[in-house]
Picture 1 (tube, one colour):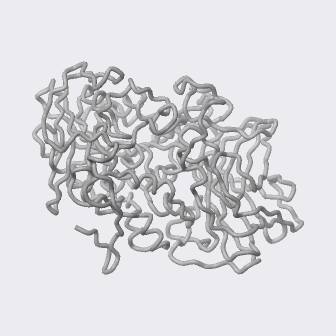
Picture 2 (tube, one colour):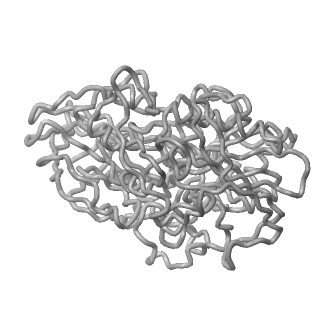
Picture 3 (cartoon, rainbow, N blue to C red):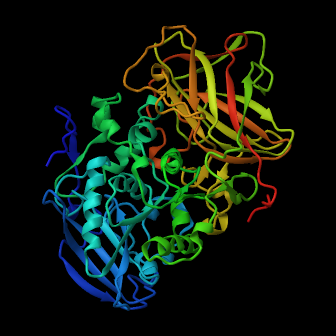
Length: 599
């Protein structure tokens, strides 16, 4: 049935691939049950099951409107007692199906194939690991995916209600103890915000392991600039028997904020269950939403861990599994295991040219003791604590093609050299006074980079080289593997501030109408820069880069050069006198009891 969004607005649709004719590892629609014995391997190069496991394939689950969807259930066979269920929810296929797997990234992000069983849903816990820990893994094909009825939905409250129904149906299963949790990376984490906001009674806790929480503002149209190449890539390989919601076509037809896009901002403040939130700086998709999710939860049973690597690499580390089990044991099994003693916020700090500083504890996020310091732009390419008096400007050509490999042209740089050890932790803001003689709009991109004492720009390799098993010079230039620094973007015609959604440290903008820029007129661009945590030593440098194109590294090699430019002509940055362009940096003190050597 169509998803109605008011009297006139119904989502546009696009085709999906049929399971039988796609390279999807499709294993048929049959419902069956098998016992996988302890030590069972899907292949010689796969991890074995650590305990005998009941595998129920294609269990049918009825939603409130009569739609039937499918799920695979893995549960330990060695116990007669009911167990909690961990649900993984996404359209990527279940239990080893689908186009999406770790092989899409060079080096599998440092996770060797023999570490996993091959039954794991993409971005989800491995059943071979978790049945041995006393849990059932429920890999769901949501509405429209593979043999599940209906059309595929892309987030929103309706998808959340489907998740509510599945939580409640799973809790009724005779093998379930009535406690259900949600877990997973990326799409699986995003879905958790929407499902948990519907407050299903048997949902005991969630673990969104890096998930955006606002589809328009954080993903498709960040800063008002459409950036859809990655989302077209995903949609091209979705598999089912009907259609899928076409968010890219919806953005083309409805480029401004409306009820459709508002419905795709998760109402995180409604979530009542305990939350284990994971975040990192390395993703160009989920950083903002992960932190926002943690911040806007209204209760105190929430924990944030900011790790220094990449989401898929972190998911399959033994330490992550152990910590997640402690969290799940506390809230799905009622075990008093000291979980509440874990620090509320733990933050990793990147050093780029040295190992990261891991798990620095803080009281809250944003760090309450943050000091915001202003650095002014000047014509000599420096950032200064003193505002320049003389009016001047610099410019760049805004419409050059970008390959997103960290070496594009027409990028202005402004440098500051630190005279004492400094920790930049949180959201920075670039407040720029800008003009363009050639067009009535400007898409402005900013990025913070770290340089060494000699001024060489540094790159952070997200995965330990011992796991990638390559030298640093051989690491592929893709975003999952290399982080350059936090970024921000704003289209000038959306420069108006949305005071309802803005925060003291973050300027959110109004996207429901355009205010074109008269040619040559200087306008104020208040550009929020996503969260980061970077340690600087004496003599090391922070670089503010400004350009007309996205300066993050492309997610995959075939996406290089895929983002179009909407700019025309030269952009001018003004400073001095009444146009004091500046950078606002969040600075924190690292607790004295924390060793700044890597852990």
